[in-house]
Length: 355
Image 1 (tube, rainbow, N blue to C red):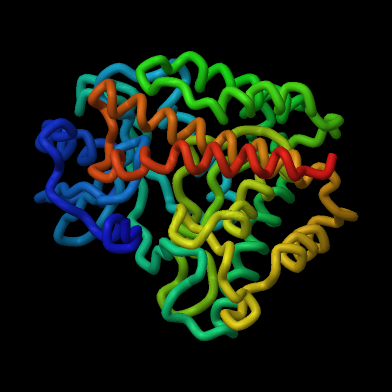
Image 2: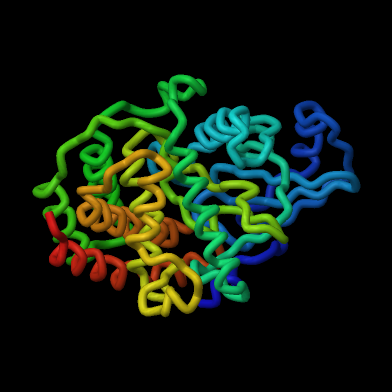
């Protein structure tokens, strides 16, 4: 699948995800400062979990994120949490869209939702940053590195997010959570390598450092909007998986791009990174550690296996939503096809891990 073509731009709202646009316009008139219709609604092509819409008026453009209609897993699709973390980080000058309002009244469009500003710029769907010069690629990688390091520098309590998650024990809880989510989603079926990983991860948990920071949970190039002309991050998007947790685990998730084959999500494996101007994995890790005063990431290999498993569990969830008929993206079926290759890759990494 050509991820750039498949995910760029908008399309007409699918039949299943349509809602009362006049009711939304009335709500925005009361809750969004400066709103003036008429309102035109389209649906972004990308996104697998929370349906995302572009809202255009003659004077401004907005983005709406909503909980999907239909049966959902407990605790999933928490748009209220997305709204809260974006609002808090925006007050600190971190690059996120300005959020206008959260609506938890399902009577308006059928599910909870929030509205934020539309940020113009570039979304890069491939981690190789096609079309850029080597120096420009290097600068964009440095911008991503600096952005996640800055996110992990915030004291959650200081910015009003001290209760955004549990302190300590993050990796152990996450292993338990995603193992349970995988095992409980019977609609998606079982995968032998996933079963092996559930067992391996539970038996090799690293020591808990007790460090607690805001973690994004899905930090990768296609969840950012870059400036159209400069190597800078204008906005970090898709905060559905954010919580308080281990910043090193969050960063290692971001580093999965180095282990993924080109063409599988945002993979770099097998490419000539030096020729492309992309820093090697070791350089990228060292840059993050310098920015946040770390000596290194001792549990890097375990965290890589865990994050690959976690991503596979998320894809397993997409497969389950397909089976239940409430997957939000037209490309969910294509995404679900990578489940078994991804689980196999995670198991290979487990077998090679230095613990």
